[in-house]
Amino acid sequence: MRDAVRIAAGPVGANQAAARSTGPQDTAWPGQSWAGRSSRVCVVAGQLSAAQATPETVEVTEILEAEDRPWVTVVWDDPVNLMHYVTYIFQKLFGYSKAKATELMLQVHNEGKAVVSSGSRDRMEHDVQRLHAAGLWATMQRDQ
Image 1 (cartoon, rainbow, N blue to C red):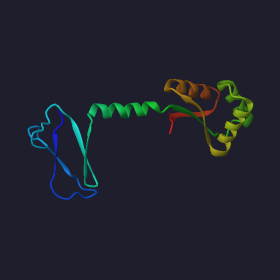
Image 2 (cartoon, one colour; image 1 turned 90 degrees about the vertical axis):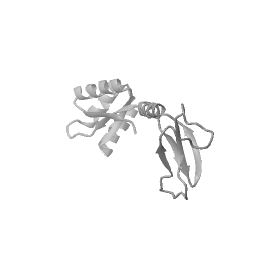
Image 3 (cartoon, rainbow, N blue to C red; image 1 turned 135 degrees about the horizontal axis):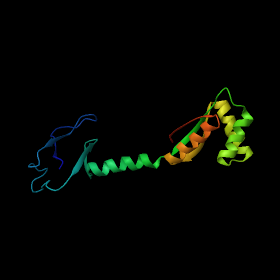
Image 4 (cartoon, rainbow, N blue to C red; image 1 turned 180 degrees about the vertical axis):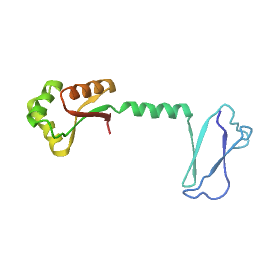
């Protein structure tokens, strides 16, 4: 169980710590017990606010936020493949129209890279392998 938190006396500066951990035997105010409770106390501009939180809920939230971001497949410019071949590969592998495939090919050519697909990690690994088999330079990464 987390330790109880007691507010230190005196003025609170913007960057000063205003709380210190004490043992579970201490109480924050007379008549209130910290037993069975986990709390995080924050002091903002001299005001006290308490938010109920446990390390488990914070950890799960961070993991869920990381899992929400999809993976993307990035195709990089290379000096070997011709522009019309890259357009053809985008059409065949991803089912893009000629206009969309040409737009992505020009982005690769002019900017050096383009995101061509997004989704689960397994699917992006598969897309990268197919692009490598076609002779294109491709990587995968988390979407930003």
